[in-house]
Image 1 (tube, rainbow, N blue to C red):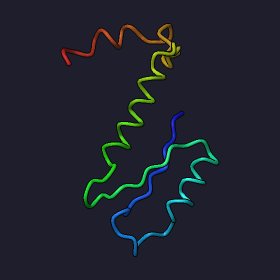
Image 2 (cartoon, rainbow, N blue to C red; image 1 turned 135 degrees about the vertical axis):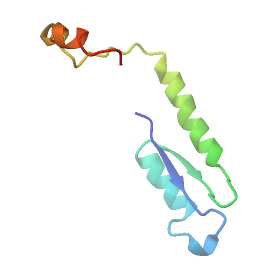
Image 3 (cartoon, one colour; image 1 turned 135 degrees about the horizontal axis):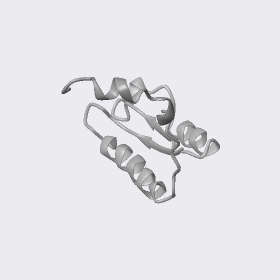
Length: 86
């Protein structure tokens, strides 16, 4: 699982609740990347999504096994074939 800590309102120092240093330390403590963003002027918003996407893509090359949750043997084929066109 990939986690990223995103601090918002980097454009409004007066509205800040957590310092940059506190954010970095918290993220480091839990093994996360830290970015400060501004929804108002889009600072680092794309970068946050790109960072997560890169990590997902990097990890997607690992083989995953997905077990189906439907037991095909228990399916009533009579009901399936008589549903109509849609």
